Length: 101
Image 1 (cartoon, rainbow, N blue to C red):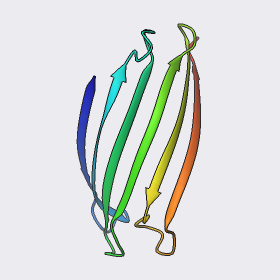
Image 2 (spheres, helix red, strand yellow):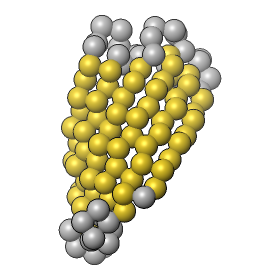
Image 3 (tube, rainbow, N blue to C red):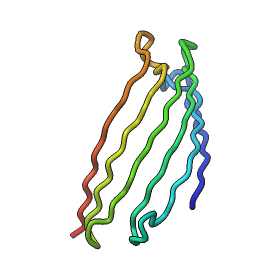
Image 4 (cartoon, rainbow, N blue to C red):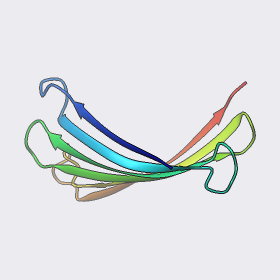
């Protein structure tokens, strides 16, 4: 089991998001397969133009298919995107494929 907490800051003139805090945890080898990961994370961000705060959560699962090949599906849920005033909630689905040669 791994736990993380991170904080980020950006100058308001450089980026729309000024403050970002994220936390979550990962489970190593959830199915007893070395290299597999499963995790969930949560984040809060503050907009530099004071539109509104944004919140998001992510769920992912990294599958070690073979020694050099990994497949990682994920979904990110975004509530009140701070850089998009008229959006309520969004879901973003992703799929990453990694092969080492």
